[in-house]
Amino acid sequence: MTKKSKKPCESCSGQNMKSHPTTWPVDLGEKKLTIGRVWVRECLDCHAIEPTKAGNEKIARGMMAFMELMLR
Ligand SMILES: [Zn+2]
Image (cartoon, rainbow, N blue to C red):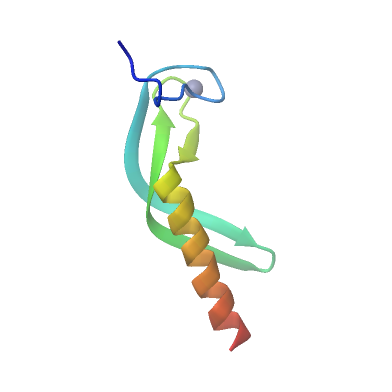
């Protein structure tokens, strides 16, 4: 049986999701930020990519650190 925690793809509802780290670009208006080694889930059927929970937290931390640098 598949685990309940395994969400299907949001784009095509496919179950073939593969987790891997990647660089995640963040668009902050005039600034572009690239966060490295963000864990994402990629759909092997339609190649949609979404960050995992840990990936989202890493993106949030990266943006916070970036904002602090900008405010200095
Ligand atoms: Zn898909």
